[in-house]
Picture 1 (cartoon, rainbow, N blue to C red):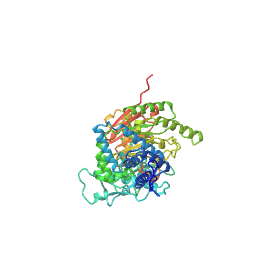
Picture 2: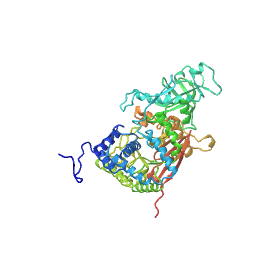
Picture 3: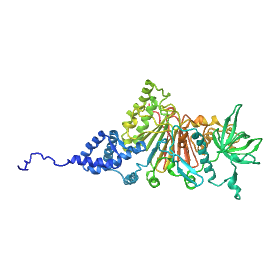
Length: 577
C-alpha cells in the first residue's frame, strides 16, 4: 500500500498534537511554582492561548500576573487557582495591552521599576497582612540583646499563663525602649558603677520595700479589687505594691491598665506617688538602629533582601495614594450616592492605590436571622453592582480593603476575623482587588508600615483616667483642657503605650495570645483609627495619626500618600441641584 494521499485528504497526526504539547507546557509553568489549576481555569487558559501569537511567552507572563494578582488581592499566593482569578488576570492583561502603547518615558521607567519589584516576588510593592496568620510574635532576649521570632505559634484557646504573659511582654518592650537612650539606669547596674551627668536610677517595684528615700520606678498602674474597696497598685514582673496617688492632675493622659513612671517614697507600707508620667515613645528610626527590631516583626515573611529592594524602589512609586473611610453604611441611600460620586471622581482623575473601608457596614447591629443576613448581603450586592463599572480601577490594580466594625457580624474580640464571603455576597471573588481584612489590618507599602484599626478606643480612654487631665501649663488660665489638647494626648498615649487598646483586659477584649497584633513598636509610619469621633490628624515622633470620622455623617475621608508623607482631609461634596 502507498503512503501517498491526495492534497485534499487531511493528515492524521502520529504523535502528540500541537494543542496537547502547548497545554502540557503551560501546565508545567504553573506546576513548577506550586500552583494548581481548577479544570474550568485550565480550559479558560487554553482558549486564551489559542488566540495568542506567542503562547509560550504569554503563558510565562500569565503565571507572573496570576501570582501578583493573588498577592495584591489577599496578601498571599494561594496554591489552588480558580476560574474567576484567571478571568480577572486575563482581563487585566488584555486591557493593559490596549492602553499601553502611548506610555511616556516616565511611565515606562516606572513600569520597568515595577517589573523589577515583581521579579523578586514582591507584587506591586503593597502587602496586606492578616494579623491572625501573618503577624508573628517576637521576643527580646536580654542576655543576647537580640529580638527573635517566637518558636511557639499562638492559639485561640490559650491557657491562664497567657493572660499574665500579655503584660509581661508589654513590660519588657516598654522597659527595653525606656533604657535605649541611656537617661535611666537600672538600680543593679548603677550599683556597680558611677552615674553619668543627667542619668537617674530606675528602681524595680520589688526593691521598693526597705529602700528609704524618693525612688523612681516603672510598672503597670491598675486598680485592684479586694473585699472592702478598690485601690491603686503598681506592679512589675515580681511584685505588686499598693499605691497612694498624691497627684491631683496631669498634663498627660494616663489610664487604668497603663505602664507609668512613678516617683515617690514608701510610707506606711504603700508607695506614695508625687509625680506620675508616661515613658515617651521614640522615633521609628531610633528603634530600628539601636534596638535592631527585625522589620519582619510588622508582618509577613519577606527576606531582608526583598525589604531592601522595596525601600530602594520606593522613590519611583511616590504617587501611591490610600483613600480611608470609616462607618460606610451600605444600607443608606445617601452613603451609596456619595460612594458612587467618590468612585466616579477617582475613575476619571486616576484611581488610588487602595481604598480602606472601615465598618460598620450597616447602620444597625447585625442580627443572625434570615432577614438580618438578607439585609446585610443586600448592601454588598449594591456595592458589587456599582464596582463592576470601575474599569480604570481594575486596570491600575486598585485594592478595596474591608475592615470589620463593631456592628458587623463576627465575635467582638480583638483581633477580629475578616468578614466571610457569604455575608459579603462573594464580593472578594467577583471584584478584582477586593480584600476582606482583619481588624486591625496591617499594610506594607514598599518600606512604609500602615496600620488601620476600627475601634472607639479614643472615646473610651478618658473613661478610664487614673489622674484627671488638665490644660497644659502654657494655657494655665483654662479650667478644662481644650479639644485639641485632649485629641493630642489621646494619640500620644496610644503611641507611648505602644498598643492600640492600652486598657484593662475586661474593656479591650483581646485574645490573649494575639496581643502582639495590636502593638505599635517600633512605631509604624502611619496609624488610622476609625470611629464615631470628629476627624482629626496629628504627627507624633515621626508617626502620622488620623482619627477617621464617620463617612455616613459628613462624607469625610482621608487621602494619604505614604511615600510623600502627605495626609489630606477630604469630603464628598453634595450633588448640584
